[in-house]
Image (cartoon, rainbow, N blue to C red; front, side, top):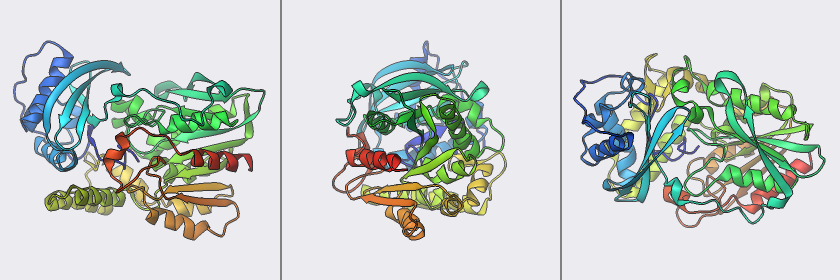
Amino acid sequence: MKQKTCLIIIIILIGSLLSGCTKEEPQPTVKTIEEVAVTIVTLLMENNYTGVYNFFNSSITSQITAEEFADIWEQQVTPTHGTITKIGQTRMTNESGFSIVYVTCNFSKIGSLDIKIMFNSDRKVVSLTVVPIEEEFEYTPPSYANLSLFTEENVTVGSGQWALPATLTLPKGTGPFPAVVLVHGSGPNDRDETYGPNKPFKDIAWGLASAGVVVLRYEKRTKQYPEESAAIQNFTVQDETIDDALAAVELLNATSAVNHSEIFVLGHSLGGMLAPRIALQDSIIAGLIILAGPTRHLEDLLLEQTRYLANLSGTNQTEQIAAIEALVQKVKSLDINESENVLGAPKSYWADLATYDPVETARLLDIPMLILQGERDYQVTMTDFARWNETFSNTPSVTLRTYPSLNHFFIVGTGVPNNTEYLIEGHVSEEVISDITDWIMHQ
């Protein structure tokens, strides 16, 4: 779970958190979208949260007040990142019909990051997030990726309203080859699960394809269609993740280079948690690969991560933690209005997950599973892995492994695990790639 029940740097994503509205104030007159973005960030520097709020689209203002936005920023950003001390350059892109401006800022505790602001055609903000500076990083292939052994082609997962851009990585040769669908963690991930200089899904795709495995990865629905996803009535993980994973399996099953009896699903974090539920809905799936798959409720992980990072910060965050605890209690009691979002999701989302148990669902499956866990992972921890292990350690069809030096992205790290190490360039461990490859080839 990356930005994700992962690092909590997503501040507003199409109708985030609670409900409410506030009185509007006049907005500054500006000439360009980039100037609007700089104005918004300047207001953040000045702690003028109401001024920022006035730029938000109704998809946000109908669900959160200016005061609640201020609390989110001060409780989730400032403690770990610090305050904005300087505004640098801007750059603009377009994505799915939205104008996106990246404003590079210096944060007092963590250094340079981008504030990513997504605008609709009316120049209203539909998303505001803090992200690593993507333009600073050029992807360097891992040593285990042999580019002469595979090709890639652009394909589409699904069709119609939710058609998703995707990449199919194909080993050279006649085939047919075993194949894997990569299923993201939580948050609006791209097909590579990009975080800072790291692209774990690209590492996995290139590593497995170099060893003779077809890999399909795709843009997550909440990234490709953020506003449309937020408008879904009774939104659940079926909409967020499962339907598109099933569509990806269907695409592989229609691909001539694929051995149709060897189609596997690899889920990371939230994707790993949901992998058993995905497999339960499609008998074509030959096996599951679960990377850092939570066995506890997401709201519990979020609270645990908040406490962990607060402790690392060395500052007194009692009030901030108490606020998160109150939200977690709302999730557990489902004391949520139908129009309200709590911890970034509506009541329907939490009600659905409240009845889901990944381990018990996995017990219903009669397919092999490979379950892997990094021991340095502070987001999905060895506590989660322990339940997988307790349940399946004596099951011949299930293989379980842990890696002492690997973090949530299965990248080597040292010292006390923290959120800043994700900004250090690395690659998914070759040992993990080798273990996945060997497991697939022996099924």
